Image (tube, rainbow, N blue to C red; front, side):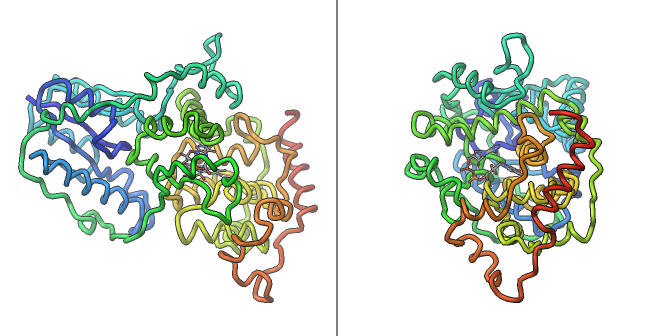
Length: 433
Ligand code: FAD
């Protein structure tokens, strides 16, 4: 008899809730990862950097497991196919895993839990990805918060050392199932190619966190942690990071709370998981949805240098600074009146740190349709944003070197006209806010 630890967005052997509980349960623990074809088949880019990132993280785990005379078993297929195989190969007592709050993941887990039950095995899931989930931080009347500031107040008053402490999985490493290293399917066999990238990450630089409130708004400096991808795939633990941030820099901690907030929203509002506007009247907006204009935005050819710099940074590196994510998203939804879902999907394809909860939250914030969004009548002015946040044009010069030459396109819309058009269009759809 064995237990299985099923890794998904938690690719690490330390401070991992499900892994800790699995190892503690005394039966031998088989570590498993599935390259899910339902997800991989949807990726357009066969050299997707995130697939390479996952692959490297798994190889790193494999090296650690080899030293413990164990092995990760990596499969390529649908979770259902793989579990049917695993149930034949092992006598499984239980599958341990960490919870994921996206709709696809919820449906997948319900299906796998059923399959396991039919075969006499249990499905045990844990909170690991966030500090607080579902109803752990809610209003006194049991309703979810929909505004960030009171949520964050309650979050902070609920926090204590218990929620930040690590799961000491290491103590129980002897429980890993002993076997020779099992070979992984190659990237090529799965239809992908190595992206060979240096992945961003200022690691957990204490100095950076201390300065964060002063540096984080300026895209021209390296002033944010760039840990997004590590949080996305769990190569660092949110508890370890929050412990570092707590008492060090309130602004940084607040960003981690935004992350919990958007995950909470996702888990408590099915219509958000289904892709609808949080405020449903915003789905009445008559978007212009012009394909050619969308293409110019994607390529960074709008004629607004701060917007173009952002899109080119994204296209080249898979990262975009938060301030510029807000500016480019506002430009697409307000200046061009293109449905925020188009932008959301484009970011989903390109961002290394892509995460449904945070991306959807960010897009709806910019479009004005979200919980706790910027009111729709506040339209970012790209020129003023540049003056405030990229005054010496460091960021723009880096990504749009031709911006003060004749090769650079004229603005594709005039700010004042576009602003007026946006306000009229929004006002028609949304009676009052
Ligand atoms: P830091 O500034 O160093 O922050 C540390 C961590 O806190 C981040 O890695 C992230 O996990 C979390 N965080 C920071 N800001 C936010 C926020 N506003 N909402 C939720 N979590 C936050 N973040 C994603 O992780 N994935 C996305 O797909 C994503 N899409 C976005 C789309 C739009 C339109 C906008 C406006 C924001 C989006 N964000 C997203 C939030 C934010 O821009 C990124 O988390 C941040 O820029 C990542 O850089 P960093 O790791 O250096 O973050």
